[in-house]
Amino acid sequence: MNPVMSAKNIIALIILLFLTTTLPAQEEEMIIEPLHKAEQCRFIFENPKGSVNITGYDGSVIIVKGQLREQQTDKITPEGNLRVIQPYRFNLSAEVDENEVLLRCESFNRTVDFDIMVPRRYGIKVASNDNGQLTILRIDGEIDARNPNGNIIIQNVSGPVIASTIFGEARIMFSSPPADKPSMITSYNGNIEIRIPKESDVDFAVKTARGELITDLDLRTQKREIKVVSTAIKRIYNQDEAVKARLNKGGTEFILNSYYGNISVKAK
Image (cartoon, rainbow, N blue to C red):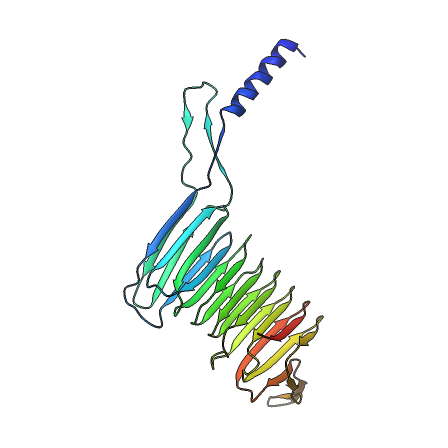
């Protein structure tokens, strides 16, 4: 190896490193005004990659903040007189009609984390497809949350909840006895925890193949049902696999399914 050439290469590399500046990650903000102050309006968002935090508040607009998780670098070319300007790494758009607000993110397989403020009376339909966690706080409308590869945390809500994950946990806390519509919580590989006021009137259907049902409430298990399917030539009898349990007078239905995880039903 030529020692002179090696030294020159090292010096050039050091200069290039000094000329590379770390910049703040791209951050975008969008304020969305619904067409009407509809009580039953629904906010819809599917994040291709990254976390989503949604918080209900008493305002009338939707405030969206998205931030690229990775840092960007601003580089100067080896010639020393040209600077590389980084392009935008993700784009936001929204579509508003009378009853729905649809937010879109084009992230080109990059991870973008979102903090979103939504009027608390709204319904929510939200998903994180990869590399993130879903957190939903203080929402009174119906919630539909999907996060196949991460946790789902929902707190201080009063409407029905549909939540599903495969490789994460689901933790839901109701601020008041849940509405009359049913809730369904599913996790294939993680634990499920439900917290509800102890005065709630709820019927539970709980199924877990490898886990346990854990509670600190006065749940009364119900008689196991036999399901009968009749055809023209035969009749098939099957026992219901779900454990049926009632809290207080029963009423609102909760369907809780996990294959490997434990299922906890606790007092708020």
